[in-house]
Each structure stands twice: as C-alpha cells, then as structure tokens.
Length: 192
Image 1 (tube, rainbow, N blue to C red):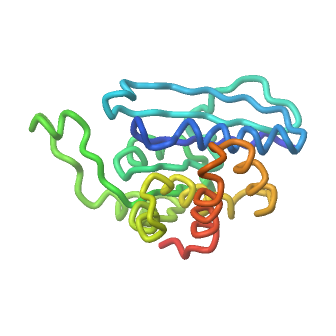
Image 2 (image 1 turned 135 degrees about the vertical axis):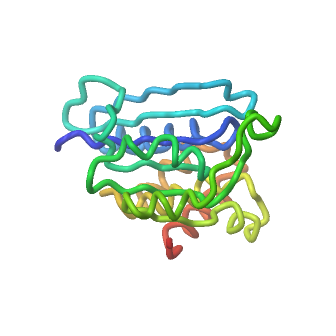
Image 3 (image 1 turned 180 degrees about the vertical axis):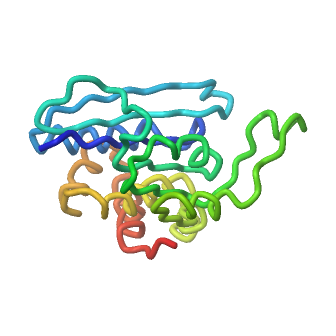
C-alpha cells in the first residue's frame, strides 16, 4: 500500500495528540509501518498543535510535505485555514466549525478572518461539522475530537469495529463509552 498521509491540526488542549495516537495505533494494529510526528507550538497557551500520521507498507519519514496530505483533520476553523495547503488535489479537509481566538486576536493585534469555511470550500473538498455542539448534546464537550475523527474515518479504509477497538485501548478506561459514542455520532453525521 502506498503511504497514506494524515495531518491533524488544532489548538493546545483539543485532543490533537490523542487523536493521532488513536490513528497511529489503529494503523500499527493493522500491520502497517507507521510514523508519527508532533509539533507543539505554544500548545500550553492555546497555540497550534500539528501532528502527522503516515502509514503504509513502508514509510521513510514522519513529516507530510505541503500538497501531499490525503486528509487534513482540523479541530478549529483558523487551524484549517492555516494548514489546508498541505492537502493534495483530491484530499479531504475535515473541519470542526468552531472558533478559538488566537492571542493576536485576543489582544487586538489581528482580526479573525471572516468566511473561512466558505473560502476553503471554493478550493478544497471540505467536510464541515459543528462537533463541539454535537459533543455538548452527549453531555461532554471534551469528546468533540472523536466526533471529528468519526467523520474523517469515513475517508479511510478501516472498519468502525477496528476504530472502536483502538479507542478502547487508547483512551482512559472511564471514558471509553463516551468516546465510542462520540465517534459513532461523527461516523453517521452528515457533514456540510
């Protein structure tokens, strides 16, 4: 299998690293060569967190180059905007329709761009969901990342049961049920 390139982007505290570990664990469990890379940009202060997950028969390096990502999973609109150029021509951009103001916006030194999703939709194959709102319906807003992952899973070659298995092995035991529920919501959610 030719290497698959997945990029996961978000803001510190959004579960970007956990999501990459779930995807990486699933690919390892299926017998693929897997490379993971994590970039923490002031993550503890709400800065960007970027992870790359590459898997296939043989993967030489962990970094995904611009224009080569099969899927970009973004947990926030501005992060999708910042990293969409990593997608290949027919790649899928999965976005949580949520806004988190970065520090320059908070202090008034910059403005949050308008119409991000509309602009991205003109150039990329965009799948947008309000996973944060959907996770609140489940009673736990922290599992929005599993909802976004569920949407992204429909663009990968793993079964829902394989995803459930790795979620059970990766998340804290007391959160297994809610994480699986959230994943299931995303897996069946109609993305815009």
